[in-house]
Length: 326
Image 1 (tube, rainbow, N blue to C red):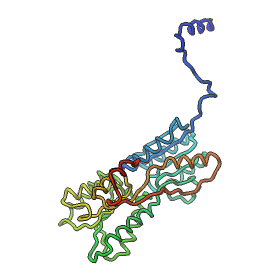
Image 2: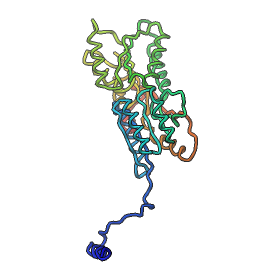
Image 3: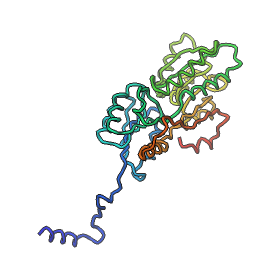
Image 4: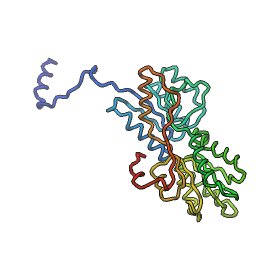
């Protein structure tokens, strides 16, 4: 009776309307990748996430599990444990800060799941807890920025007053960029650190803390340079400064920034930002290369650094900025 009903149903369906299903063994197997992104606090981070999404697609053979931690390490740790339970083939981690990862990475290692760090680094006694790190050399970036400041103020005999806007405290990006400036201030007797403010890589927070600091001074302080640890902190600082009558540029306050995003380079072309130190967010293609090497049983290098450059207003054109991917 069941066979007869099935035959009648098939005869009643219009030609070509019968559902087609591939045998299960012929369905393409997708490689499952778990990504723990720290958040979306900046233009760099948005571009970094977009690079991941456009690389690890189903068309390329991947199933992407993407978790936004909203700037909380606890959320990242929970996401990694979730990925372990889901038995992903690789975990990609953009670590919010450098410490506090040993336990959860040991769990991933015990489960046989390789972990690739992207953008920032971590501090662990056992470096076998992660397979590779792909990102920027933040110490090098800071040294390039400081070198430009030293050349810019080389012939200045009087004080060089610097306002320092830090990124997320404890992150490898903050630590590397801050260390370079701190060493330079120690080398130059006439360099004076006016204040060190925590902008957390976020534009709105930087605007708030910079405005509060400026308004708390008994008189408008003389500021020669603001060392901003990413573009979003630069945007917030520029807004606070300009609202209080400061000019940002070669005739006023020199703004040093990191990332070289589209908006950052636009500000640089306009002269508001004097130096942009590139931090390339488009890392996913290299992440995929490293993963494929691991999948084939190879041993990747421990660190892969992206190629980056410096930009001043003289280096830029509108056409150059418009053709960039971020």
